[in-house]
Image 1 (cartoon, rainbow, N blue to C red):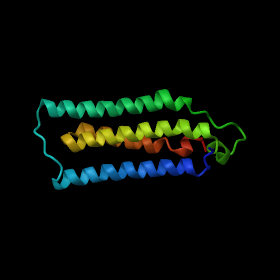
Image 2 (image 1 turned 180 degrees about the vertical axis):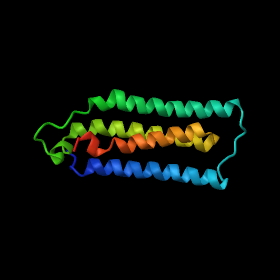
Image 3 (image 1 turned 120 degrees about the vertical axis):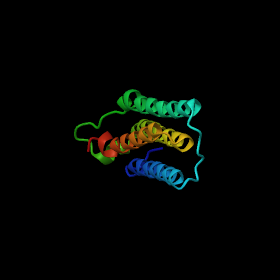
Image 4 (image 1 turned 45 degrees about the horizontal axis):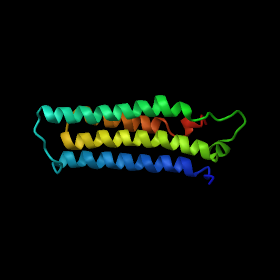
Length: 140
């Protein structure tokens, strides 16, 4: 099954909008006090650092293990031709899913603990997700 050239960039946009929406909802929940208010103890810190660390590891795996496996666009190949190749979509989807998962896990860590380290990790993962969009992957 061949993907249409517009499907891959659209998927990135949809994943990104979902990730930003989730992070915004979590920030609102924490701000208005609807989210659980944990006790600030060692367990809370351990959960915050574990979820933040897992998010950072997912970002590193996405960028240093799976991103290099995405083939570069060949000279003379149009962006449409590049995105219509099924192997490109399959490989880049994995990178984006890992980056989106990293942001989601760190954001949930912030929801559960309220620790700034989780918010920072979530923000960094969201930033990296948007920085490695279709234009950067295709070098358009």
